[in-house]
Length: 209
Image (cartoon, rainbow, N blue to C red; front, side, top):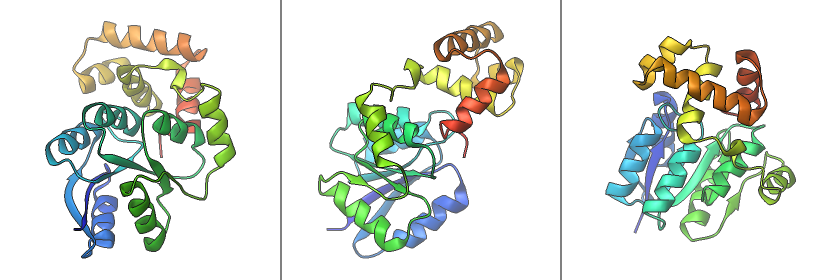
């Protein structure tokens, strides 16, 4: 039986490229999700063997999407696809229940090996990131993003992208007052003091690729 895959990636060209690269007699692409909410929905409805999960997506990021999938359909394996230099974000995803990670720049053979490994219940930690740093984040309890809620991460991402309070409110269909409250809580939790520091933090954490 082929391994049934859902690809969760907000960039259409990347998503389609992955689908074309992976589709063989041994792998069946059963769904493509352009954001985290769609990824959770597809995982629940289709119950694939593996979800290939991008970390940075609109609406719901890969970490929170992984957490929700693992809570509702824990049998579904999640393989994180990431760029380099985001060990803390990878640690967050692993803490949320991800079964492994591979770099987006990896070759076909390695990506196939990663999919096969996690589908078989074996964790896969691909080369290219500092594995010891990931381990330190996990063991040190520093993988929770300062306990930001899913909504706070959404607001933080939009702040980092340069959106103003009104634009964030419109994008998330919430009140400006609510945005201001989230902004205040985010800065308190992260001990940051302005939008520039918030943007720099998001870039360091790999939230913007």
